[in-house]
Image 1 (cartoon, chains in turn purple, red):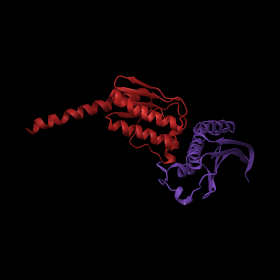
Image 2 (cartoon, rainbow over the protein chains, first blue to last red):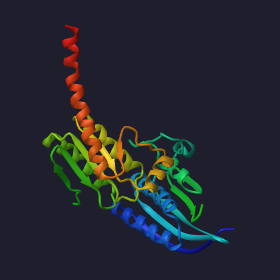
Image 3 (cartoon, rainbow over the protein chains, first blue to last red):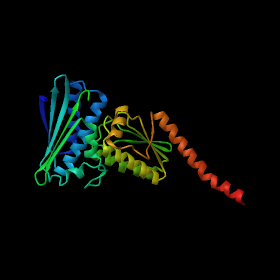
Image 4 (cartoon, rainbow over the protein chains, first blue to last red):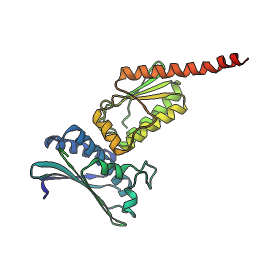
Length: 137
Length: 135
């Protein structure tokens, strides 16, 4: 059972918003005493996902939640955009696949950096990516 | 617009990144740096990222690009001061930064650059000696 303790929604429409979002995630991570390596992993994953949201989804909203499952605390981030969606999610999660000119490491890399990763996408409607990192995970 | 300053020190260009980079800033740095290498005929580029807490795939690619572009313009690139947490994250992300020289701090980075450039100059001279032997 994972309970949500606090919620904070941040609009992301331009690149500088991404900087603000990363700082906000860091503040929350420090508050729940997440270690430096886990903080760095979580924020790097967030950085990849927020870039995807800006580049492919014309921006969107990021929800920052502090969650708990008893003794462990963690941070759950939900990135929601109303962009064109992803036609083949399985392919998008493969290393080295990109429809842009990037390295194709964003989605699969972000997945490796967090404890839980979930992606839902419908072509024409948008994409929602949820990641969760436990403070000691 | 924000810009990251590039300092010239003899044959080298020095860049210290003190702010959180966003994509456009990183792209501007890439363009500025490559232009500076060309303009000053620098032999080495030293990038200090000790104040950078996040390097994601985009930033990693820019660093790789700067190294390859400088190489074509006959300059070596050394990245110094990477935080341990950043190194761990880069490897898990799947970005081993191949082809980019690294050093622990600015001093070691400077020595590495100097050595690399010395070696290059030695190699340039070697073929002539070989020729004289052949004759």
